Amino acid sequence: MTNLKKSKIQNSSQSKIENRKSKIPIGILGGTFNPIHYGHLLAAEEARQRFNLQEVIFVPCARPPHKNQPDIAGPEDRYKMTCLAISSNKYFKASDIEIKRGGPSYSEDTLREFKKIYGEDVQLYFIIGADAIAELDTWKNVEKLPQLCQFIAVNRPGYNLKSGDFAYILEIPGVDISSTAIRQRIKQGKSIKYLVPEEVEKYIYKHRLYKLVEG
Ligand code: ATP
Ligand code: MG
Image (cartoon, rainbow, N blue to C red; front, side, top):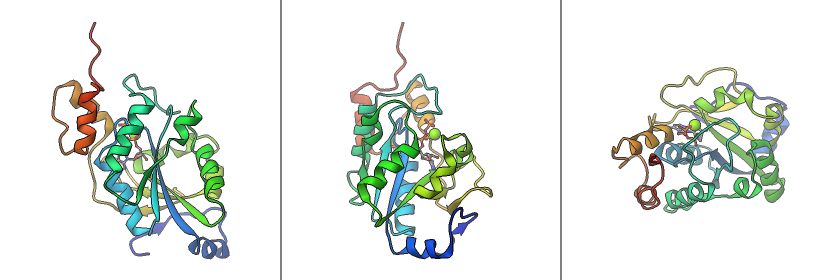
């Protein structure tokens, strides 16, 4: 594949790599999606095209293990916004697997569940941004993850995407959007147009998400 670098491949002999190539590639993008925005969507679409992913599954977490967020919307709202955002892309799916499982959402558990659902004919690709890959060593059982999936690491403005990763590096057009900035803009009464899909914007206003609680 052009423009792709694999910095380090763990637990992989050449025959395993060949084997992987004959499997059906499916992408997973996990996140809080609080709310989902165009940075997520572009990362997923770029990965889909470059890796010929048959589908990309967006997986909103129940409770992020690494975040202590006071302004986190409920899982149902985050899931619904995700469904609205992806509805126009036939390759994109949403899964409530982590929300249904409840408790802190660990990617290892999610990957194992997907492996059970899809079986051995599928190779899972976990799409992850430069900020998240830098924190990967804080994830639970991170050393087990390369047996369960391949990582596709995408650049993100403000973060360095470099060595030390066991991931394919995928250069995408940088999108300087974060859910944190969107939540802040809502609190400040600023527009979020063109940062999130219109349906997501409408949902946020209709359900009065991310507003400061008065009193
Ligand atoms: P928050 O500001 O609340 O942390 P976020 O914008 O970082 O939200 P997450 O739901 O935390 O969004 O991110 C889910 C995944 O998408 C992570 O792997 C993250 O690195 C990646 N991601 C999010 N925004 C971008 C972006 N603008 N460009 C590239 N990757 C992104
Ligand atoms: Mg984040």
